[in-house]
Image 1 (cartoon, helix red, strand yellow):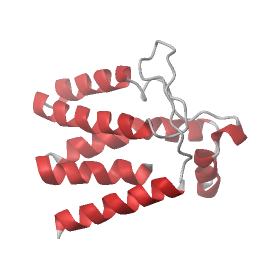
Image 2: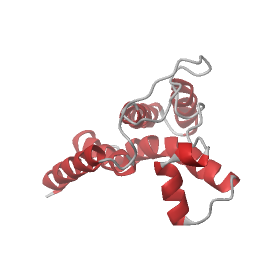
Image 3: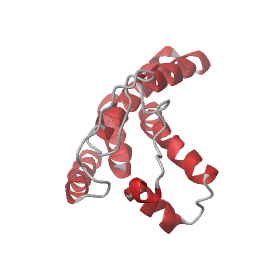
Image 4: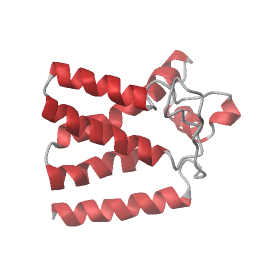
Length: 147
């Protein structure tokens, strides 16, 4: 749901301000995907997209429990607070939390309470028709707000 992770912080930024903190908070969570793809020497864009859609086929897990958890939310928000300011850290945390909530709908397993081994996963396949319809809906909403 990459585009939804991008669109919703922009919508909230329009309503609340602080676009950048919301946007970075929402997008930084998926840096683990990039790191794992590079670590496993997947440099071809088409292959990377296919791996994102079909992790089980490739036997790879692209979500690290560190970032896709409340541990990642708290630790990175604290870092933002220490490096920047408390106000920015709050908006960053909101963006991060929104990302985690959106990811709950994906079929991929998440360990929100890591290091506890409690699993969460939704039912939507990556790039499903429902995801594309939601993306279109939020994109229209974004255009309405910005026009």
